[in-house]
Image (cartoon, rainbow, N blue to C red; front, top):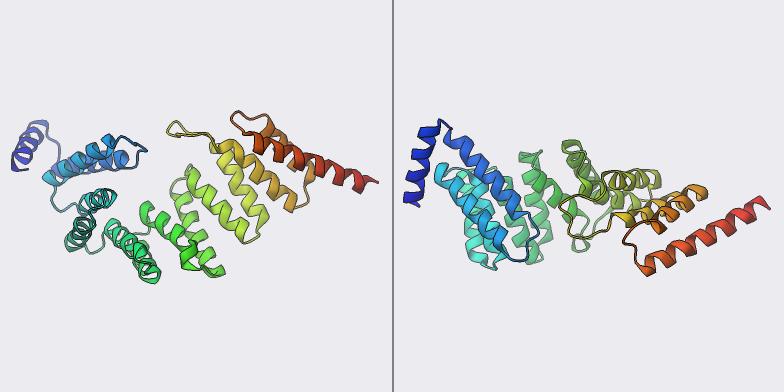
Length: 267
């Protein structure tokens, strides 16, 4: 580590780059690699190397320490992970990533109240931290949390914050649509499902699934009595690439039922 650190400092002095800025660059590359869907494990190895480069430049970068804890957790090295989260909090008592790591630990032990407490604290101290916001929104509506209506609505508020931070966050739109569906707020759910369709498939997707959201939009339209629009969404699903036989069957069935219902209304 000392050899790496000395080499990096020599490079930075020559280039004129600030060590803290370079550390942040390495951290962001590491975070992007960590979030990759890579079954080979190579991305995680590269992420670990980036986090260590970041810490060689800035040993006080608590988030990088916490992400090394996430990597240890992924490798089932629980004690090492916990030590990493605690070290990150020693460096920065407001480190949201470390609180997320500890919350996940408590969740595994079925200590949901403590997990929620830590996640709420993380969001309170770092209200723009997307990791903490997403984790809290999910935890609030998890089955083990036994969510109340107020917890569903709290989850919605955090998802709305995520969308305000990044309007192209397709996952946040989709999760928010599911919250509104649960709360039977059909127009709101429709709006968010349409946002998912607007954003569409992304280059990083490993599988094709966005087409199926036409079914969700159609269901929300049915709930509002907008049957012709619902039929149009089911037909869009039928025209989509990748739809499976069961999805196609269900869409055709809904179209037939809605046309029958419209016929009866005209009579």
